[in-house]
Image (cartoon, rainbow, N blue to C red; front, top):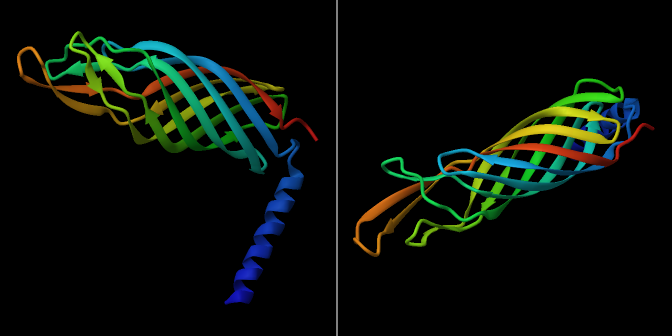
Amino acid sequence: MKKVALSILFLAIVVVSNAQSESAFKPFKVDLSLGYAMPGGTGAKGGVLFALEPKYEVIPNLSVGLRIEAAVMARGTVDAQGYASEVDVKAAGSYLLTGDYYFTETTVRPFVGIGLGIYSLASASADENTTAVSAGSKFGQLIRGGVEISHFRLGVEYNIVPATTTEYIDYNTEAKTTLKTKNGYLGIKVGVCIGGGRR
């Protein structure tokens, strides 16, 4: 069994090495991006985002990476009747494993990508009773597309994150109310790629 496992490992190294040697670009790079975060839902307010994403090209035209992002925005929060609540603007972070596929190996490189990981949601206070919308973490995903032109990157990402449901008691009427907070958001980004240039 050990010989079989070592043979498979050796074969995988050879295949990846040969594939990597055919690529026109250096395998490692880091993307730095700034952009606009547009959350969904009634009462939501857009904000800014910042992302850092180291990547490695495992085979020609396919890169895998780790996206670390902070987005400052007001998530859309509504009660059971559909009325929006005033929500403070807060930062939320995410940590996703990503994969991008590039359609060309020229200076202009359109791409599509996906990602999976954890979204860390900040707590916020809602409406005049300072109701707490609790912090927490959700497993989510993203889909994205865009283009890299030399070392510049333009992209659009949709972050798919399950909604948060919070129950609270109104201190004035003692009535229970359920708040639903939408956590998904659209990101429009511009950035630079450090490294990853032509060999």
